Length: 81
Image 1 (tube, one colour):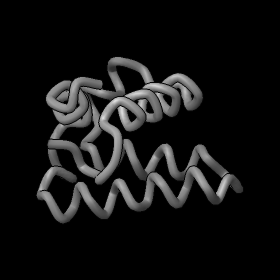
Image 2 (tube, rainbow, N blue to C red):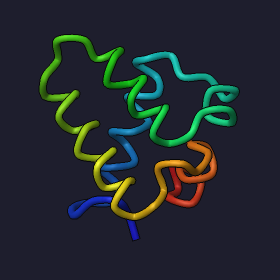
Image 3 (cartoon, rainbow, N blue to C red):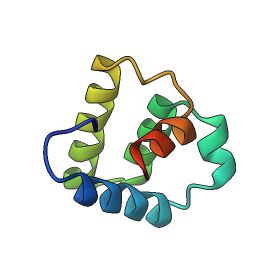
Image 4 (cartoon, one colour):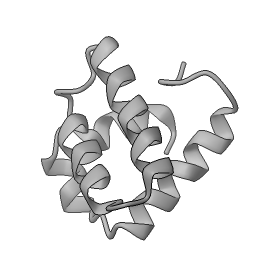
């Protein structure tokens, strides 16, 4: 299962694009919680309201599923990202 409703491959592609676009390192993925990573990406998105909205929705889903405090890298690995 994924944290959203829709196409899992599109989700994975989008997350990979955000990680590349915003320069997230493997150390960041190891050291940041999922909530911290998503919050950082929202900050990096600046005035891009579309991206900020998507990331905010993903953060809300992570909170609902109790994954927000988990290491970002572990969650993304389980999702196949």
